[in-house]
Each structure stands twice: as C-alpha cells, then as structure tokens.
Length: 131
Image (cartoon, rainbow, N blue to C red; front, top):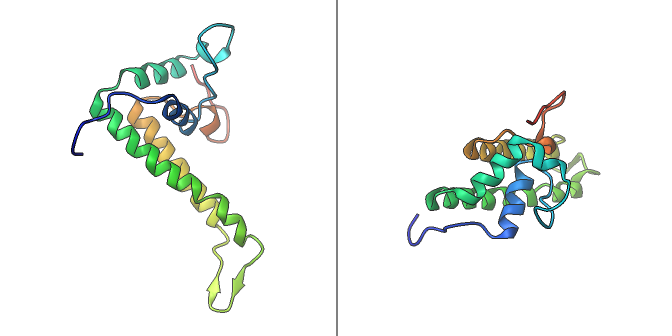
C-alpha cells in the first residue's frame, strides 16, 4: 500500500463488515433492548472495527472490495439457470454453489482476520453458538 493509510471506517463500511461477517444490523443507536448487545462475539466485532490500526483498516478495505466483487457476481448466475448447454458451451450446473462457496470462504477469511467467529448468517449447517 502506498500513500496515507485510512484511519477508520465509514458507517456504510461498518455495515458491510457486519453483513459480510454474518452479523445482524447494528441499528440506529446504543439505546434500547437489542439482543445483539448480549453476544460477546458481536461486541468483539464492534470493538475491533472501532480500534483497528490504520494498516489493519487498509486490509479490511481490501477485503470489502473483494467481497463486493464476489457478491455482485452471484445474482447474474440466474441468467443461465434455464440453459444446460448451447452449441459448444456447456453450463456449469454448480456455478451458483461454487460462487456462493467462494464468497462465503472469503467472508470467513475476513472473520479470521478480525478474530471473530462467523456470525449467525454465515453459520455452517447444524447448531452454532455465538457467545
């Protein structure tokens, strides 16, 4: 990286970090009775987002860019759901699954970098506890 390193995240970037890590929306403020505030992992994510070193913020911004690209590539796969093959071209029947798995793999890497477990929306099949 060259130039000045970023010192923090915008609200939109924090929303994307939460979402990509599989955690629910933050909401409008700290007041009220919201269950996410009682999960240690969510609190750790919030703490990390607000206290990363500039070089770590820069790494997270690279993750956000990569994840946005991967996420945007998933919906267009629906254009080929009705075609298995055409002339010499053969549709990858597993394209949606493959792209989703690639996207989720990068999401898990982001969680690993931030030191938080994947959130409920990114949980594997089965029982997942977030404390």
